[in-house]
Image (cartoon, rainbow, N blue to C red):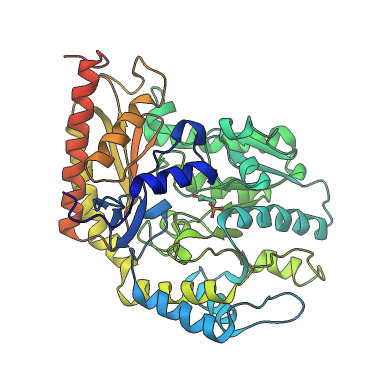
Length: 464
Ligand SMILES: *Cc1c(COP(=O)(O)O)cnc(C)c1O
């Protein structure tokens, strides 16, 4: 129950509705109905009505260390009072950016020793497109330029990022993708696996890459880009057979492998990087989100020696950079964030302790009548909602996404942020979540499923 209300919620909502154009929102339909979030502490956020809500999404997959960590704010304050801004173009540097590059290189696999900084994951992926094409030009292969990506992948919302992504609704707005990008199948066994076993399907999905490369000719394909586990696409965990096969295909055909670590990087899967979990060696790793736990915007591309030796070693000036590449305050936030992750051993904690703990309880939700599959890896999970438990292919007799949206609204009413993707529900909580809070998360998710199930019964969308 709300105890105090220092905010005039309705007035804030109306002012928001008057001038704020919301990202990924039907702003007109939203009207003056925004949820106003005013505070955060640990895994909890607080709205303007005084409700405490368990942030099952860590903001947008980013708040690894939880909300309200004073030492990050202090580090940013200290940096800003010393040097709030200077650029890193034209032969200059500053202590936080060089320290952060050194730190990220030390955490990255041994063959990756360079970091190019950006302001976001999208900018990192735009950088990837330019680096990859520059690399092949310098290798004397100017026709090796097409990048293969995946349907239902997510790589950001700039023109380059959205083109690499495989989100059809995004492509439909703004004539995307740009030329030179092609999309292949995703390793989504629950949705698309048919009668194959997960292992068979993983190989099949990986071999779509081989088929695409051979159809175009390896001399025209520059790179393959994929998330270790698709996040925005619905926490799609590839079968075990998928990644080793992808790595083999890229190696044999001399295609650069870009592993988008924007979500999986910095502990989400119980390793510093998702590619380490899956045992593959990327040529490039875009990063963002967990790098600073979202405290300030910062991203980057971690670059292998193979690519750096050519693009830096032989390429002369690379005509690329952002005003905020290596922003001093953002670097200070990232350094303080990484210090917390290391000191509190959050990466090991996800692998050995809270990961297995929450996974066991989350998977038990698979017994709920509304859940066709409950899957989780590290600290990212999904529930596939189904009208009956007879098979994977059964869908609700309602527009795709309606049930997911209904369930998401029930979750919020139950004090839990879960995101709806199509008709599945996903979570990705802060890595600091305690055992008690994990129990609370699962309890609230179960209540939410019960409420959704009751409402669907009322509407005749599930069996009695
Ligand atoms: C969020 C995300 C991006 C885009 O990052 P922004 O900071 O929103 O630009 C890119 N790749 C993946 C895998 C993401 O989840």
